[in-house]
Every structure is written in C-alpha cells, then in structure tokens.
Amino acid sequence: MRKKVVAGNWKMNKNLQEGIELAKEVNSKVKAAGTKEVTVIIGTPFIHLSEVNKIVDPTVVAVAAQNCAIEASGAYTGEISAAMVASTGSKYVILGHSERRSYYGETDEILVKKVQRALENNLEIIFCVGEVLAERESGKHFEVVKSQLENGLFNLPADQFAHVIVAYEPVWAIGTGKTATSAQAEEMHAFIRKTIAGKYNQQVADNTSILYGGSCNAKNADELFSQPDVDGGLIGGASLKAEDFSTIIVARAKH
Ligand code: PEP
Image 1 (cartoon, rainbow, N blue to C red):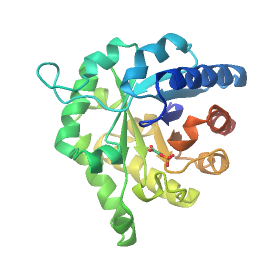
Image 2 (cartoon, protein in one colour):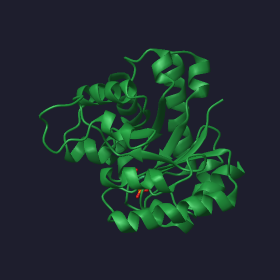
Image 3 (cartoon, rainbow, N blue to C red):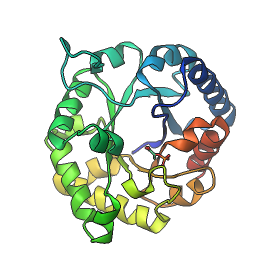
C-alpha cells in the first residue's frame, strides 16, 4: 500500500533559529492533530538538518535535505554529500526540483548519479518531475514527464524504485499562486502511475506515492487530495507557516 505523504520544502528560507522554531511548531501541531496515517516530512536547508533532527519526534515528523552532491566525497568545495545528509539523521532527500533543474543546470544524467548516491546511503528520495508552461500549452506535458521518469529513474530495478516518491510539480504552478486544477493533477498522476506500471508492473505502480506540488495551500489541499491518484503534496510556501502546513496534513488524513 502506498503512503499518504505531506512534505514541506522550505527552500532557502529561515535562518537556523527561525527554522528550529518552525520545526518545533510543526512537530507539536502534527502530534496534536494525531494524523498518524500521514507521513510528514520537512525539507530544510542543509545547515538546519542536524538541529531539526534533534528536535522532531521521528515518529511524527521526518526530515529531508533539498539536494545532495553527485560525488561521494572529496575535493568538491561547498558540496554536501548524501552520506553527510544521512549522518544528520535525515531519512529523505528531494532531488530534481525544477529550481535545481533550471537554475543549477541539473540534467537527467546528473540526477541519475544523485539518485544512486542517495540510495547508497539509504535515503528515501522525493523525485520531482513537471513541465513548464510552454510545454503544457503545446500539449507536450505528458511526453516531458514521461521522459523525466524514464531518464531519471527507470534505470533503477524495482527494489530500488520502491525507495522513490514521485512529486509532480508543474513548473507554472510553483510559487505562482496558480494551482493545477484537481482534474489536471489527477490526469497527470494517473498517467505517471500508468507509466510506472508499464515500466515495472501494476503492483509497483500501486505502491508508489505520487505527490502534487505547485501552490498547494490550506484552502485547495482538500480538493486536490480528494483525487484517487494524488497521494499527498510537496508544499513550498505554505510549509513555512505551521498552521497552514498542519491544515494541509489534516486535509490529507481526511481522504
Ligand atoms: C515547491 O517548490 O516544491 C512548491 C511546490 O512550491 P509552492 O508550494 O510554493 O508552489
């Protein structure tokens, strides 16, 4: 059975002290909400990982990095390896976010290597895919997402793919306040599941959590999560407010 997941992506927000406060608030709100059926993850900046892992109850909130290096270790000034992420107690890493793809030139080839590093260090992966507006407008969105899955993930054998959560994030919806309709999200999520079934089998596809990301907030989460193939959300802006984030988690628990 696939998991219901709500993951926050703090991006480059909150200094260490602010991050600690937010993590404490999220932890206590989620605990109080009693939404045990939802896997809650917060994706913090690297420097927060160790401290935030000390604060949160791991049975309530898990912690993710937002990236990791391609290389295992060595002379790569400024990089953070998957092993370093794992050593902070973090269980997840977000890979392939559209901001990493577009601002830092992360190609499918780079992502294949990062996925390997993450798996070698027993990290679970939240792997982002999604089309830009021009691709949707020209009807290429299915093709684009299929190619991101094929080129970034489908080299994995099924037992490794089991450690992947897919996040469908239409780039035109990220941070824009323009959310995909629940019908658009469902259509793409069903397509992603079908594509996974075609590569592996139906059981693997049914066990894969597929999250929606892109201006998902406390108001629209309920409608998005009512869709059968939307297993949860990857939440940017709204994850920076504990109240909104916990409302989204409660919405996920409801369906
Ligand atoms: C994201 O960056 O993963 C994201 C979904 O951002 P937002 O919710 O702010 O659109």
